[in-house]
Length: 205
Length: 106
Image (cartoon, rainbow over all chains, first blue to last red; front, side):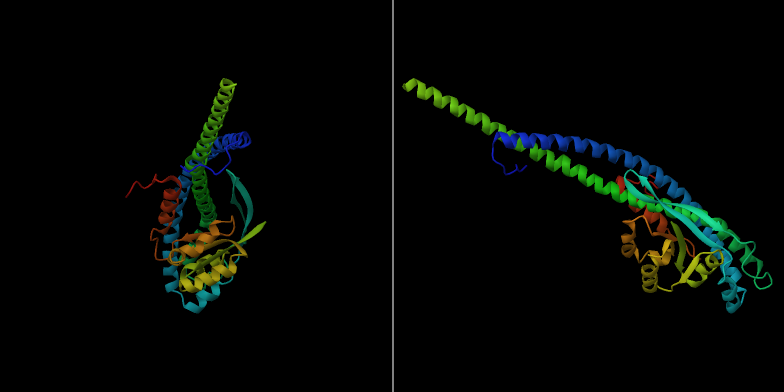
């Protein structure tokens, strides 16, 4: 391991010892942070998997049903019927904090009008069901979106944190330790040299 | 902060969402989808994207992972799920933990 390029003086020694202390403390903190993030991450991953399975199954079904409904309706009337929504789905978006990572936090606030956005006579009843199902599914989809985003952001952060921990553990700390050892060696060497010199001077006198 | 919700996908899949109150943007191919997503990313907080379009745009969508919003989520289209969601999950898991804790290599 390469040692740092510094002068072997007491000043430097003091500075480096302080740096080493900080590095060791930082390393411990980051490692703890990493452990906790991994724990949270596993929770989020499980949750995400559960939600995704549920949403995918539901949604595939709904969309399949909807395509059937569409295929029995003339294209122009379907177009006209579905392009005027009766609800405006909006979500209250905030910021949540998971282990220092800013993640989204969403609350649903659907302003729902009664009934469907088209006359029953226009469209087959399968379409009504699928619109209903989608409306019912939306909160879950949004929850999934938030969970997945959280998971991805946390995964990124864990990766970054791991890199920091490794840099401290395998580069910074060994480097500092080696440099400190070098300076100590050099200093005691100087001291011995001084003692020997004094003895020589004294013996000649 | 009130956020709007949008969906980008092929015509049939998004139409039903429009009826449910989600802004729908039909896109036939990934090029179109990329343009649309770029345009609406500022305005909409949550963007659903069908799997067929999300998969080829993987690298493009990565940039949205840096900030909390917008949230881009891939959803299955009317052709059913092709496992892209699981792929994302697996990928994140392997990056963060180094091991697969859910699927156990199946």
